Image (cartoon, rainbow over all chains, first blue to last red; front, side):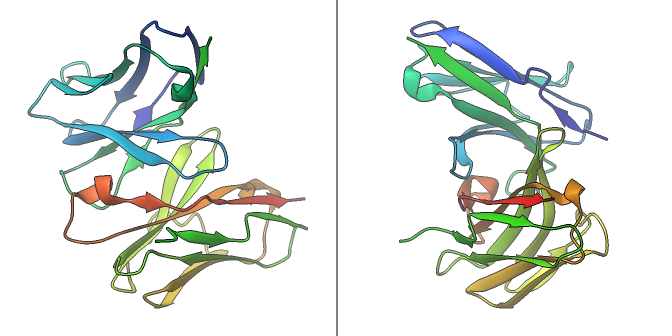
Amino acid sequence: DQQVKQNSPSLSVQEGRISILNCDYTNSMFDYFLWYKKYPAEGPTFLISISSIKDKNEDGRFTVFLNKSAKHLSLHIVPSQPGDSAVYFCAASLIQGAQKLVFGQGTRLTINP
Amino acid sequence: DAGVIQSPRHEVTEMGQEVTLRCKPISGHNSLFWYRQTMMRGLELLIYFNNNVPIDDSGMPEDRFSAKMPNASFSTLKIQPSEPRDSAVYFCASSFRPDRGPKGYTFGSGTRLTVV
């Protein structure tokens, strides 16, 4: 039972345009959401997070939107840069600060020059 | 700071053989996590330790998998006997509690396991 789903295995975007990565979850008890970025041959690194009391969190070029009623979150990258090419994982936890995360399958983002 | 160190980086073994994956967490971190990455399921938490004590091993797929943390600077994940469906990338991560929670995870570079 995949509680966190990323239905797009891959996404290709032109440099300078907006990249939108999507994530759906099934457990309504999830209270905290995170995005991780992973380059080849490296471990994932934390990118941005959002608590369920918010619907938007912004950090530079990265913005995460949360729609609790739809159990959906998205990561927007504007403008996209070649260095953004990586695999992006969505993750969720029951409470902020919880040790245990549930991850999605990941979306491979390719930024084309 | 050398980060989380995993060894080996790559492991190819025959079905039925024992496989041991190793992890050295960041010094001072007192939580350690083992994850497995597959195409179908993404990153799955297998087990995690706090202060060397296993807290949650509900993600360990079956009895063929075992994990130990004999001290604060070393952990192993063992698969015996290994099967082709165990082929995946295995990540170790560590963190310090209390901290920002999952934001504070530092992942190792992973071990790519291939069972033939």
